[in-house]
Image (tube, rainbow, N blue to C red; front, top):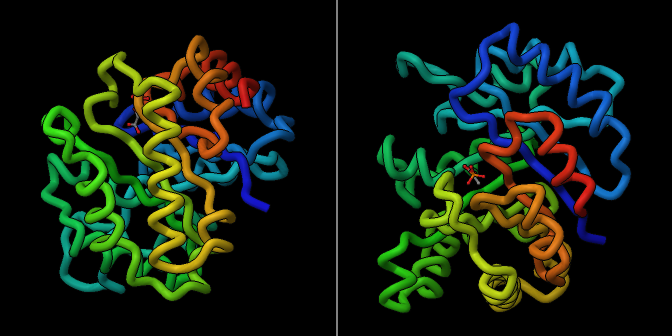
Length: 250
Ligand code: PEP
């Protein structure tokens, strides 16, 4: 059965002290949410602290990125093996900020996906259209291409380790959210595309999260849609109270 998931992407926010404070708040506020798997993604330097702090709590710690190579001369980068060695088994790949500011292409992301899966990690694969794509009615084909080029090459057996996050770029950090109907329409399209590329069983099993200005006041109506299996939360994940309210909306 496909899982409900609420994931918080902390981006480049929270130093070590602030991370400890938010995690201890989260432990009490979302540590016992049963209706969904809870994932938090602090920055690299605080991942080890997070796994230590959350020992025994029902909260998964994820990385926000990783390099595609096993190791080598890639100054400033982090490998899958490094993440695994501190008990990080989940990684966000393809976030729109990585695509826009760090030049990550579908082809590069396909390599990152392969490396993560090879290390038996769970991948939260992000994708979504920009405003001009939606305005020109190009959003469905753009999303389908991102999937085809970034992740549809993986073996069917790998899908048990894949979570998709549809994040329309125009809704990220802007306060503008896709309407529940727009989210449902795209999620149904994505599930259908997986069914065509693979089979209906895989399509039915994969969790598809929505991301883009999800807040406590809009979470419930978005999560109520049948093909929306939870959310990838940015800004509202930085506050334990609002993240807990979103988690409880599932
Ligand atoms: C995100 O960056 O993945 C995101 C959804 O951000 P926000 O919730 O702030 O729009």
